[in-house]
Amino acid sequence: ARIFAYKVCGANGSCYADDIAVGLKTAVEQGANVINMSFGTDRDTPFIRNAVNDAWSKGVLLIAAAGNDGPFPDSIDYPAAYASVVAIGAINKSLKVTDWSSRGINLSTDPDVINDRDIEFAAPGDSIESTWNNGGYVILSGTSMASPFVAGLAAKYWQSGAENKPPAQATRDFLRSLAVDILPVVGQDNNSGFGLPQALK
Image 1: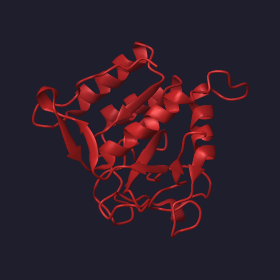
Image 2: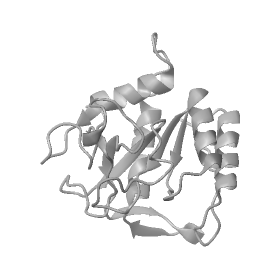
Image 3: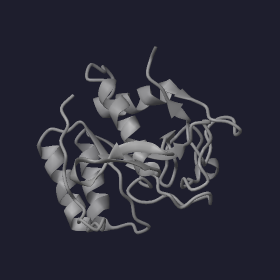
Image 4: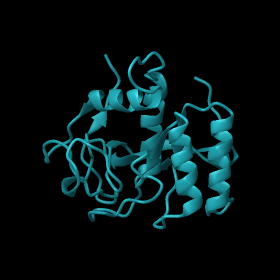
C-alpha cells in the first residue's frame, strides 16, 4: 500500500472545515482508496458532509475516530457520525471499551445496518505508542489512535476484485465479517458496533 499524508489542521491542533474538505477532495483526486480521519467535531458542517459523501460516492472508504466524549449514548463526533463513514471507538488491552470512547445510537436504529450516529467498530486506542513532533514518539490515548488500525486493515484486505459490490462497500462488509464481538453486550451495540475486526490468521 502507498501512504499519502495530508495536513488539514494547524500546529495548535485546530482544524477548519474548508481545509478538511479540500484535503478529502485532494485525496480522492490522487487516487486514495481508504481515508483515515483522526479528528472530530460536535458540529455537522456542510463543507465536511458534502466532501465525505462525494468521496464515498466515488468509491473511497472513509474511516474516522468516533470521539472521546463517552460514555454517554449519542456522543459520537462528526465526520464519524455520518453513515457513509466507518466510525471507530476505542478499546483497552483488556478488550474493554474505554469510558471516554464516544458512543453511538445503534440500539435505537436499524439492526445490522449502519445509520447516521452509529458506531461501526472498535480498535485499540488506549496507551498507544505513536509518532510525535520533531521525529519523536509518545504514548497517546484516544479514538484517533484506534481508527488507523482499521484503516490499515482495510488497505490490507481491499476488495478490488469484488464482483457484485463496489470495492469500498465490499471491503466494509469484509471488515464486518472479521469482527469479533466485544462483551458484555452481545451483538451490535452503542459502544463498539459490530466489534473488533481482526486480521486473518
